[in-house]
Length: 291
Image 1: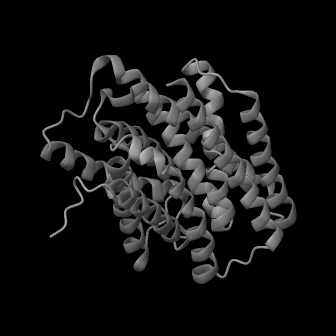
Image 2: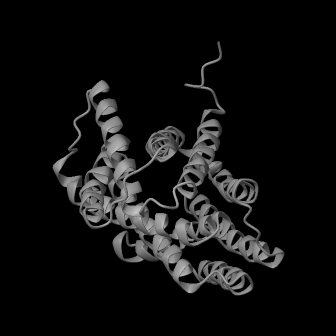
Image 3: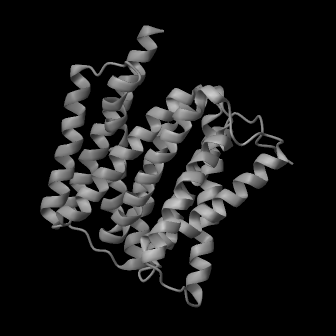
């Protein structure tokens, strides 16, 4: 039987799997229109935290990490929690494809936050690529009349997601990936508990299954992402495959939820991805030249 453990295409497989799994999580969210976002996050975090603790115990890994990294782990959890909350609210406000497109603006905010937190520089060409992506957002919003509330939530999700990536970079390889996930869920869970204390809807029938699916699919997706990016340069070289998430979102939104989007709005989303892809290509090129 073929093993993926050391197979050269393992990173590709795991990244493709994670992209599909995250897309399925979004489908589950769309099937929970009557469940408040905080309640969904509560179930998601509780399930993911339980699974993470089991995996840490199985691997005999201490969940608290090393003392020098704990502040960054906490801040990563705070930023990740904010991104999760805003991301869920975005998906409830917007069709799947535009909601997912806005999340791809995360690398822009990562680069900007990296100026202060990592001492990195942003080159002039990169500012142009950022402007291209933001222009694409304006086009998609304008022709589809998405509503500025949903767009603002999506931009907030991208910004806090980008900030969480910066704290991930500060932690680097010093901690086990499951430790990072543990801190994330540990901070998210109390926030969700407090939220649901004021906004609770008792799940009915199939809603229990959709909520369980959100938690399990999220944990599986996070595990696949970890497996992919632990493979270093190989995983980095195929990171563009992550953009398949937009294809999944557009297809699932059309097939399962009859979401109709104007052709010009798809053009705007394509411009967003063009700006992000150009920035990723330029950044990789600069790293290669400097190494």
